[in-house]
Image (cartoon, rainbow, N blue to C red; front, side):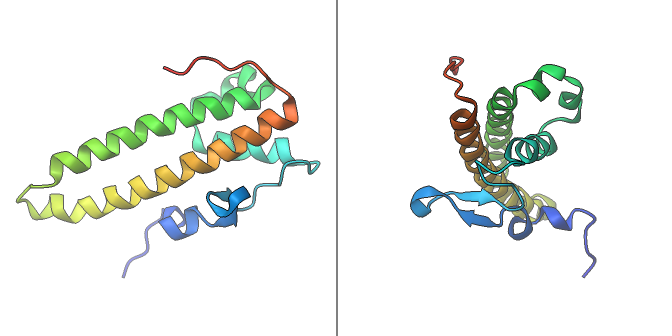
Length: 139
């Protein structure tokens, strides 16, 4: 079996982590815990890895990691909606290629859904550490 250059993006490798408060969601693997000296730095680096590359050039996002987290949640939620729509559209396709690729869509859907939950954990932790009380309205 040929290994993909994106092997690290397989569901197992991408979403390992420790259980979050309450045992539900998982804390992202390799991300420093809230309260540790490098938490904000590691959170920003992780969030920028999930965001579109051009966001790294937005200085305001470097200064406000909580807003970066909120934007990443929105970005991933749109991605998740798109993947689910494609899965529905291909559900009854007779084409073998579409059936074969649908597994990729399902795995990506699982990864994005898990990652959204992880980003929400980081967002809550950043909110607690920064003391930010401003909440932009969600649409």
